[in-house]
Length: 312
Image (cartoon, rainbow, N blue to C red; front, side, top):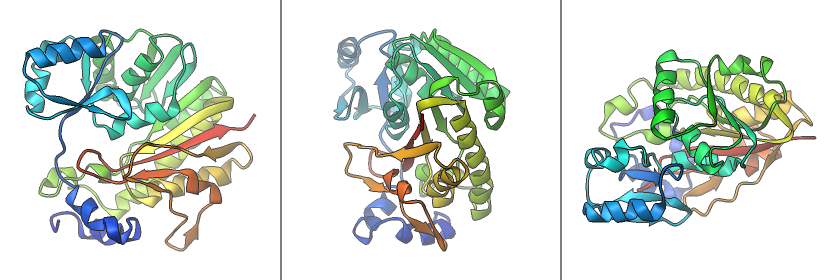
């Protein structure tokens, strides 16, 4: 694992228990292709039957009935199938599927995906809501937003309206408007590092971690303002750094005292740790313990999740 950034490797023993550290270090590699069934267009059984006819061997994911692991063929072979070109399946990492499940949007609710492109979680939420209610999918990049629009069309999504705006400022347009808001924040991508693939970590630095943390704080605070009293905000990243995770949650708890509290998250996974309570001489709110860090594994990217409820 010497090809990974030394500063990153040096921090891991402070985040991962000693008995799990070797396994985590081995997990920074390419993982099997995973995908979910798009229930807006087809059914689980229909997808499985067509894959079997084409001699694809897939393994179900115990904690998500619509998710599968491809075991015998390549990602390229999968995306060349009619299932993919018709938008009946969506290739997505397992960790990426967690935030919509934790947010748990319900039919006919108002939901915001604050940093939505290219649309993995937006399309998943539309399926969970059965194309009812309203999802506002926002992104600040015109290029990324065009990819989102294409994915929405391919997946048969009809309950989404897109916006091109800075997420930090979107609260001005939608004060206390949404039942639920997802903040899948831009991050340093540490959970997706691949040892030996310099492109996956080539622009990582501690300086970039700090830069992103400031953006993430303001995105999350915007989400709090956009959420109705009693509503839910889920904050997630695909990184491990406390500056982008626990520290962001602690910051918003300080800035919005008595307006939000962190709710426990129960995940049926064995590669999950509770949020850490201290980092670099800073002690975090006791509530931060309810956040979760998903450790990199053979099947899953590293991830972080926090579920906040806005007080009524």
